[in-house]
Image (tube, rainbow over all chains, first blue to last red; front, side):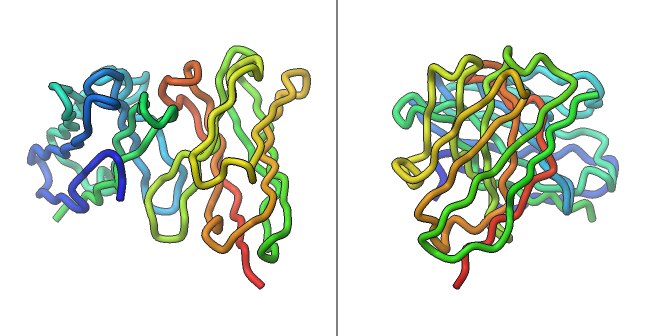
Length: 110
Length: 119
């Protein structure tokens, strides 16, 4: 059972907007930055959003992140078939003295 | 172009040891915290260990404490993970990743190396 809780699956049709939630606690999300990673099938993870809402160079602005209290969200607008992947949230946990990942959300583009 | 290349994976019997390496290029290695993250077959990501830019700080997930040791050689731009007393549940693809400090996000990831613990 992960310290950070994500829905196991999400889906949408091309062009839609989908959101993926990540729920934690005061020892992780509330007092630390949240980051999001995208893992395309058969590949290594890639940084998608860092420090709650910052996009690395090269990541389309269709991807956005937000945080409020002990929860965070990843939003993907203008959904595309190539967005089909697993998405993971992560945050440092002060109680565990290490970063922790959510269980991952498998996004399906219908 | 940033590259992280893991090596050293393979099949090993329970109780034996293995050392993974991660060769880094394209970044100033000595400025980055470095992490190991693993992914068991069909499962999610699990952080394993982190070492600070100068090696002075090291943290581990509870399940590997006392068995795994993370280290680095800044002169060789290389990260290591010494894994002892391996168990079946350590079977996973092991990724190295560069981090913004010990607590920061993982900027870059390697392609992973598979470790299989089986008799």
